[in-house]
Length: 190
Length: 295
Image (cartoon, rainbow over all chains, first blue to last red; front, side, top):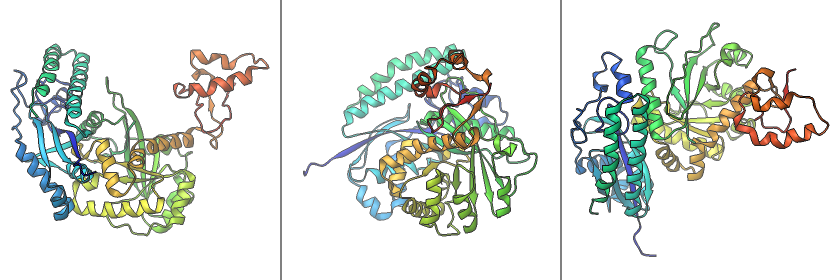
């Protein structure tokens, strides 16, 4: 029929030098510990303080930075033709600088092209990164629900790791983060 | 279950990996676990002839709380037919690796690899123009023998020219094999060159594979490679493998005993159900023959 169909891509940005998972978890997580034992690897030690979620020293990524990077990637890999095809309705619906998770709206026909361009993005604002697509959906509601589930799974995994390493401070802070994650996503107005 | 069968861990100097190498490997493995892979193979690459006293530099990491299977793999870059003679499983240095791959550099060797070499994977350098054409007949030989061709996407992430070459070479490989017997792996030198499994599946669809086939290239084909490797190493012409009596678990001790006339039939019916649990008894070969335990 003539109805215009969308796809919503739920993606996560994984940066090079933060412990894998949550950007605002304090420095004492498994990866930071591993790296702390190697001298001379200053960039890999947890780059954030331990006062909780909002003290994230990563430069916050604005929506337009991400969109420009994506459009550049489409132009580089798929040329002017690709850039033209995907231009409407490429929009970033949600992006959280705390968790580096975002929802992107694209047209259904060109989903593979935009997804491919996302895969080839190497760096954002000078920082090397990986963009990992977690879920695709035709409605944004489902993407929201998956965001919540994904955040929770990740927090549980980190909590497990903290428990294995007997790190009580991280354990309790992650417990708080677990409660807050659903609220943040649900309070979005889309 | 997603596999990444090419994580290069070739030591940069000497024969054991340095602390820097080990840190890189650890970063890559933890990122793979985060991205959603469940199995990984550490690849050591050797050019030319296998050295005599070769020591396997691959060490499998201890990963508490992370569910990740680890294999070790050897890739032999061969440019001369005489290097084939070391390439059988009786060679102890080759037997110390789980998976065996070969990288032929000219047409004659490619033909030999597809037809006669005892390997699991044929890996071609896709980031440069291939030195020979891929012919349907040659590739068909490999497909019949259960050997898989490898596509590495790491170079495409690093460099734009490599990306073009990869896309063009991958298209010819897919055309010639008709999508069968292909695996995709990363060959990532650093952690930031890895990508999530579904991203690579999407990349496979851009190359021309069907979406289901692209997903198989990362999962079930890779599992087939691991099984092929195990069959090659552990069994005698893929029919029979011998395991010492001591390796039987508690619950399997009944297999030894007494032997009632109806015993053989009963064994067959329960044998297929216990497939994945028995590492020691080696029953999971692709035949219906029973394994014999050395008495």
